[in-house]
Length: 174
Image (cartoon, rainbow, N blue to C red):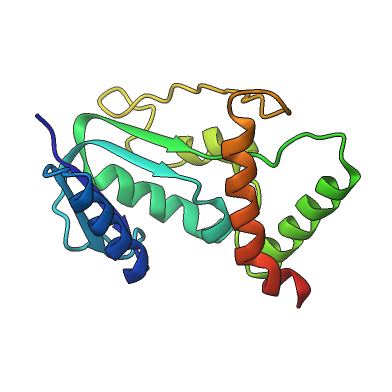
């Protein structure tokens, strides 16, 4: 009884999502190629839920206020903005710590935000309409996911991190 719309700037990602949606027979989905910073094709107050996730590595620090304002613009009054980010994991592996540092350096050199989690509440507080009497209220929820060996999430995260490493290998080598 709901419709889900995804937006991504990469046409290949949108096509893959469309293909998966079709093969899984998810008739209540739609996907748009677009720029999350300027969602001109989407009317104000169009969604009762906006879920922005893992944007830090692709958003420049100075772009956050406008991006969050755009997310709120397309969210209905009384709707919900869910903003999910991840900090780099804590580990006792020297190799992983070294890799995380390389990733942070690479993301920073590209002009983006390697870890926005410490600034999220302040950034939301700086956006018009947040924490005002008639606006959206911020509720912060922090989670820790245990991805240690022999935990249920370990294999999934391991596979995901492996694909991220493959995708970033040339960048890190440069």
